[in-house]
Amino acid sequence: MASSANVLATLLLCGLLGCLGQGVRAVLGLKGSAALADGTPSQQSVFNAAYFFVTMLIGFIAGILAGIGIGLNELMNLDPGNLKLLLGVIAAGYAGADFIENSFARVLPGVGAQPAGAVPALPQPTVAALPPLAAAQPTPQAFPTLGAALQIVAPHVNAGTWVPALTAGFNKFDVNNNRRAAGAIGQFLVEAGAGFQDLVENLNYTHASRLVAVFPSIFPDEASAQPYLGKPEALANKVYANRNGNGDEASGDGYRFRGRGLIQLTGRTEYTEFATAMGMTPEQASDFCTTPNGAAMSGCWYLASNGCLPLADAQAWSAITRKVNGAAMRGDAQRAAYSEAMLKALGG
Image (tube, rainbow, N blue to C red; front, side, top):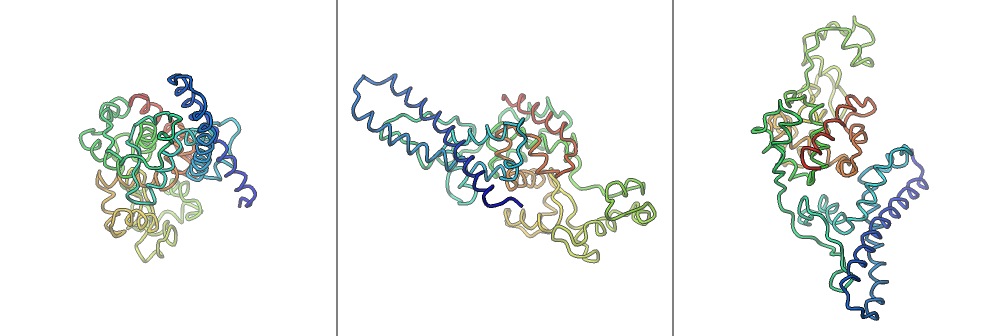
């Protein structure tokens, strides 16, 4: 477990990186304003100092929020060769008030986010042009090129079915720019298959050796796995008993809450959390996840709820894979390749 000193040091680093990003934005804004000025010094010079202090404070707060969103453990254990996470924090500092407002919009309903896809305007150093603490209410992100991009990167996906479902999920859970959309679809194409065809976990195993390989802690040898071949319900109740909020083997929770959706939710706990976000019961949510709308909505909810969206902003595809697939990192290279291809197809 990280010590409090390490956590505080990491938060301070994030704040300073945020200051760096906001400082760049402020300096560019001041230079732009100077180019338009009539040469009158006085009041403008006095204001610049106060303006710069406010922007630094905003950048510091945005950097800390970005660090928390990315995950302090990820930053404390950062590979020195991977600067994408740090660039993501700096980018959050540059966005400043817009990033802060968007972060709080996730926990305070009614707080508006900046319209999806908008590029934050550089602030002008006048009293009336201090960076706003509240942005305009969000407008739905249409992702007009999503269907065409899917046809290029994932031609087996039925765009007519999935574009409306994905767009609804994107809008509800702040997947509001091309990088986030690309990162999401890169994960979905590995988790649910190249045509989004695997919306329910397949537990119909036919070889005992495969069961031993997948669930070594449950089946130490092929003899113990043999009785569960061709019996998906019994297998699910066995391997998922007393895990992820499930009851014991007899409860049936293992099969009831087996993997579903574009990022397969698993276990009563995850289904309950998703159900709460959707105003459903866990049982209703598990059925909902087998539909295109539910599969897309649950996948976007998972990414938003597990700190993956700031990682997508930084194009830290492998860090997203770790959040989704854990230490196994199954298909990491393929997920990254899909994400990069989708980002290019969406227009960068």
